[in-house]
Length: 221
Image (cartoon, rainbow, N blue to C red; front, side, top):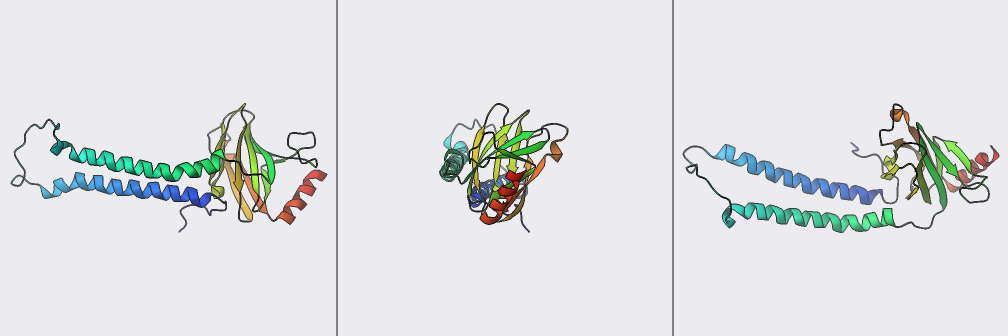
């Protein structure tokens, strides 16, 4: 049984690893906490329990489990940071050289994809647009200027492990490199009004040859 959608991006495996690392550490911590709560309930009785007395909890004997918990949590947090830091720097703070530069614009309640026209430059008069259908070439770095015309939207591509809010008045550039051909869903992950649930699109990842044919058809329209 597949828990996540199929990974089809160059950095998806790294994000999945971080998820499972956090899940494993939290699971182990949860088991320990549950054990410490339940163990006395099943092992203590009136004969084995000490007489109840007031403890201030200021001595090391009473505080040692708290200190131990703080140390374990600190080690876990630093292990997350050591893995997360380079990954997020690579994905969110570094833009590799692009093979294609497009704009992804959200509006109530559709996605508008803008391609550079025959001049190869985005935001010029010959740009071409496609509604709710994005075509990109496989194994190519695609820069996406994520924008919104009206309210806050969120670009969510599960198979690419990509999610980025689209904010009115701002343009946020993210990148993706899809490693598998096929058609994958793109949806809005931010409640944006009554039509939010229907704000969906498809990403078709094509071979370089097929993508060039698709572009040629778009230019003719």
